[in-house]
Image (cartoon, rainbow, N blue to C red):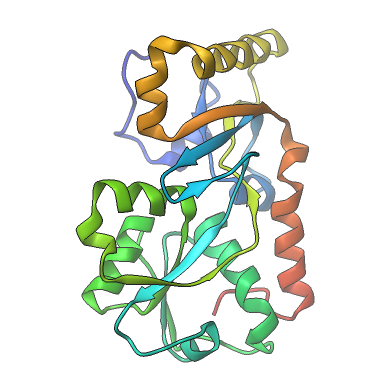
Amino acid sequence: MPDVLDRARHVHDLWRDPNLLFGQACGYPLIADDSLALQVIALPIYDMPGFTSSDATHASVLVARANDGRRSLVDYRDTRAAINDPQSNTGMNLFRATLAPIAETSAFFARVVQTGSHRGSIAAIAAGSADIAAIDTVTYATLVRHEPDLTAPLKIVARSPASPTLPFVTSAATGVETIAALRLALQEVMTDPRLAEARASLGLAGIITANFDALAPIHALQQTAIRFGYPNLR
């Protein structure tokens, strides 16, 4: 087990490492990519300034420049959307689910650009190279707290449906005894008074023990968009 976080490898490589003991993954790739073999350990509960949830759910805020003159989501037809990744739940799947009822089975945007991160999507809007993006509420609250100058020029246009938070995961090769130990360790981390400051900095309030079935609402939102005739964010 490494002593420090590994930031040198791409997250998709880490998720596919059979030696992965503990990590956090976006829920949408887990339901959309059959080649991604991970086990869900638990879902985090967050409590942050500007965002509080009593359960392990979050949503996305659809943000745009505050001075762009548009008032509602419908007004963003034929504009430029930014997404962090096509397999992102909060950046794409929840964005698509929010737009599906008004997209009318056609291309809603003039262009969709991929930025690589939620922060990158916000920066693209601020720079004028995109007009709207979906940012998960945990990330947005964190940026408001730590980079207020980045979010100050933005407004919240709409909010998406709720979905499960990003699950804590382990490799498919991890045994049941190790998974039980990981869940116990997580529970202790969430209650240890010595870690209160660390939890507060991350906005963590607790966990809910979970398995893959907990991601069903993510799949349901995908299917709802398909039924509306809007299978792709476009």
